[in-house]
Length: 443
Image 1 (cartoon, rainbow, N blue to C red):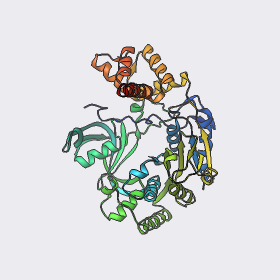
Image 2: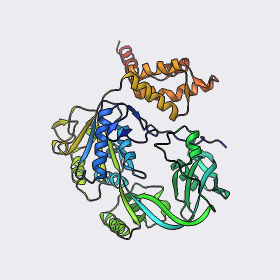
Image 3: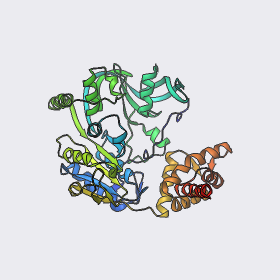
Image 4: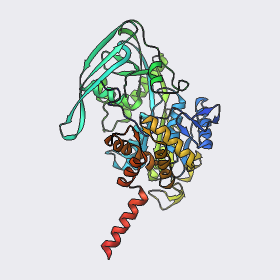
């Protein structure tokens, strides 16, 4: 069975926090590189949030493209603790959603507020020692595969069992990113999965920093047991389940319907009762809105009010614009954000990375993507990142790795990087090609 067959590496999956010692940023830490002042400012924000001194405020991350704005937002969520939700949307998404703009933003905000629920349940608990997910071609798209079933083997210090599960459960295993070496709990009735962490053996095998990733002990006793089951859902998940009055599987596969204020009030009252009874805790998360200049005056008015709400996540906006027109008006403002909202924001600026920082980020990405690269190839890729963009250099790792495998090379060579660079153009080159063709067409 292949351990990493279904592993998905995201753009920011290597980030574990802000890389701080106290309130001082390390040059490299928790997957973040450079941006010392921005990370230290973010650290102060985290401290304010933990002390309950951030109500009614929000953050604006301002800087050129590819300077780590999303990475810092992810780092803030990680620093706030385990299970803290992180929801990322783009300002332009509010126009493509099949619902009102304010409803889309409300749903995004409630997805960013978690509820940690404690229940006594019959569960299966153990370390994942084998995992195989069987996939079949999608019935409507033969180029896409969907899970058909899965075989998962769990072990404790005293027992080992293998389970065969259906496509719904297999899909949830993929969504949760369950891997060999994870210690997990499975609710026997609903199929919900909670990842408790990785064993020390698994962390050492993946060469992860044991100071940032705390190992979890392999459980003792029987795999099946009656135990307190702690899981996290969002307020939006509960809104959906309440509006549908369906099974908890409706939590796994969200819909696009609008939710009434009455339903939300009912959920808020229910959650407050759970909190009063000691059955639940509310976990405010992070709502990250990129391309904030794409929001219009109506959306900005909604955010202004939402920041004052009793149940509000930490709102982080990001912009790579200078002075821009506020959408829906003829007025111009810094970053395209109305001045009354700008006055309530703590602004953190990011700057372009230097050559050494680009190299270090590429080294971290190579480890995360589990590929090796020759020294001269890494140097060449660093130069590409410096001349074109860091994002373009990071994007070239995967195709260069593919080319190396095709050429039966274990490590990516400089030739592999050059071949990938030739086949995949950066923005400047693609614009140059378009201009050449335009001139040909006009002559």
